Image 1 (cartoon, helix red, strand yellow):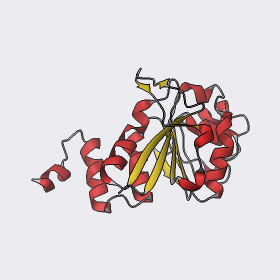
Image 2 (cartoon, helix red, strand yellow; image 1 turned 180 degrees about the horizontal axis):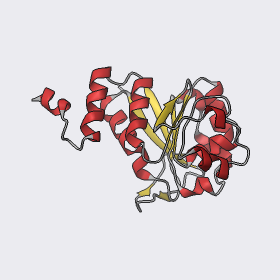
Image 3 (cartoon, one colour; image 1 turned 45 degrees about the horizontal axis):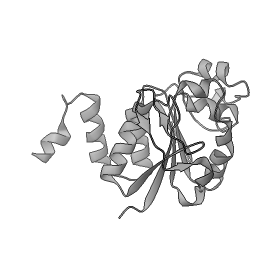
Length: 200
């Protein structure tokens, strides 16, 4: 029985691949239920031209009932869209829940002070400085694919797999050895397949 809930924010032009590893494997290997939401609950089309009919609208989202909020990237973040999500992220953080933001989604976090005092990453420190005028967290920027803090996980746009790893570790989805084997399997394109070998 599914006990925990991950809410994935979807919008027109969202980078569908950035969430794919995480939501597919959470659904397969864990007790997480995956739910999608858009601002108004209306259907959206991803960057890959995949049409999504969200389960909910932003108004339906109750942080008290959700364990993980996943914010995928997309050009809309770079244009300053989705300011409506600021209060939702703040509610998650104050409730001790986890927010995972990858690529462009980190711009919103940076612009609203969520990254000012915690270790974090993105598509580059200069990327955040350019697109988030109110960003004051450069001293805490880490030039790494993915950085996990107590309540906020950030990743660059090429680190979808590393994001999945961080979330798996955060929520103890699999034993650490199995998690590492999953990572090696995908990272090596199947050439270092300890996971497959262990299953034979």
